[in-house]
Image (cartoon, rainbow, N blue to C red):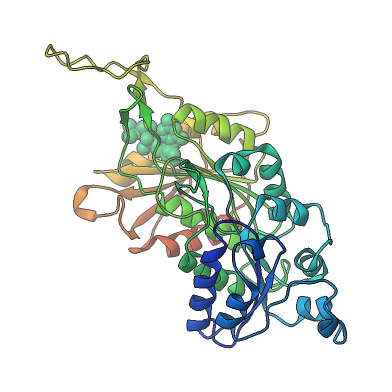
Length: 409
Ligand code: CTP
């Protein structure tokens, strides 16, 4: 897949810069050539020499490199590659990219290029969550930049949260995805959703009982994340609202992380308008009524009663909106018996245009598994698909939705 492909790797400054060395190794193992550019702050963490040694190519650092300038320097760097990967992309580098700055070699190359760009952000949790960074991320996504990660996990400053650089192999997979995209957003059969806004929910929700306990379900987020990835690969501008999952963020997608159903509804409403809304999340129907502020204690007595309250139905809320209803609203149905029959009733009850119904009885292994056998239930008929892996279900669904005419509310 990467045999003979030329990657220009921009290494930003940050504690994760050392991982870019492993990334170089992984890319080269797959037959790619890698040419490194180090920002000034990257050189505080790794040396140009180590990057150059692993790449088998000189490392570039200066905008005014006398050797390079004789060969038109940065313009050549910006042209003589198949893709540019920025890893780690720091908050500062993302801000400079989003602002169109060209004040060093890395940003000048990034501004002077028409190559596909993938960024792998890595930074402190609070820097990642800061509205300024999220604004820059949205701007970069709009500009067609693909994004992988950051992952959630333990951070250098003994903190926990999103901000960790995606793993080198995840970045490699995203590079493969980037290079598989048709070069122009207009051309190619795959860009069936070019210019359209797609909203996807994915994963379970966690509904707290007390500060340490919660109600959850077995959803992995794989199907919803695959749909978001497929929609992005088809040229859509995608927002993915995800409950807690351990699958990586899909490339090229704006990800909003939430925990509870009520947070998911708020994030969905904030992400509208959309042309297509796909509700793949396994939202908890109930939450604990009155979350305990302190951890519930055994105290040797009776178990505490667990009283439940109904959560908002996000799909039905959006499908029944008058103004601002997305022209295509898609729900999922996880059933364990009489799958199509129940899905038909759900289609009418929730007011959506299409239900993707699947049989999640334990014997099927669908919940949390790799494959899915779905039925597309619409007002005017049912389409049953064979068992396919979740990525293929996602691709076919995206193609199918792109061909559907917007429904009237
Ligand atoms: N859904 C939602 N918000 C909820 C519950 C469900 O958005 N609070 C969405 C899911 O994302 C999915 C569809 O509704 O698209 C599936 O709903 P499901 O929970 O299966 O439907 P119910 O009406 O709860 O039906 P059942 O009682 O048969 O499970």
